[in-house]
Image 1 (cartoon, rainbow, N blue to C red):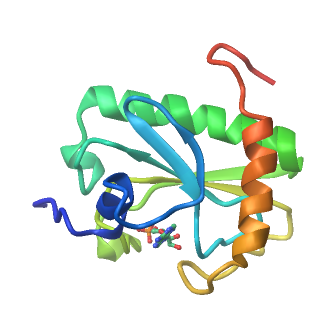
Image 2: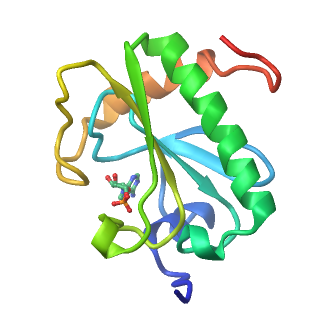
Length: 145
Ligand code: AMP
């Protein structure tokens, strides 16, 4: 799939659209999902321009998973959900709505309930407060919990 440089995550990476940032390193960026399916829903994206997993370099894939692991640890420490889902969609048939590779990190509170996908904007203040708690719990590279 050819990469559309005007997709919303490309604009976030270029600083043209704001995001509630949680973490950034050389290869990845983590921010709050603006339409969260659960409290603390994060997105992990590569800085590399890849629409789907098929175009993603091995290095960027590894960097995304390294960062997603840290994101999951931070969310678990900060919010203490009993479970956590990591999800990643490729193509509209799979439910992908933004054509820049991303991993969802979604805390799960049991009962199978998740808010609808990409449906309702979260309260900006609440998202910022959640981001601060997750940032405070961000682990060191080798740390496990
Ligand atoms: P997917 O449908 O798997 O491609 O996931 C895209 C996700 O991006 C959805 O969960 C949306 O809620 C989220 N999203 C869309 N626009 C933004 C934005 N500007 N900032 C943060 N998250 C966004």
